[in-house]
Image (cartoon, rainbow, N blue to C red):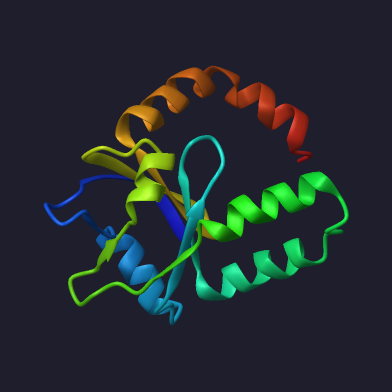
Length: 145
């Protein structure tokens, strides 16, 4: 549903505008509400509501008696906020999530199929620069065609 990379900036009120391609995909799939939380690799995960519910069900089925499960769930769910875009497609990202993802003014939206990742532009460029060389090696290990 969500594909591509889009560069944007925070406005003076700390809002971001969801890229038009993502807004169109959301509209086509009847997505009105998103959940944004701490992601992995110093970015934020932004899930459509249905996908959020699927992820939540998976994590709820993990044993809470395991320390790592408790730690992950605390960090993942305590950071979550509901985001309903306004008519211009803007959403507000809380300061604690911007701080977590080291977002300053310039951001990158990255479509990752079932979710959107929100990166500080510098962090995305660093991730891409250090990861692109291993793309084929990773594909070889993970994908059986």
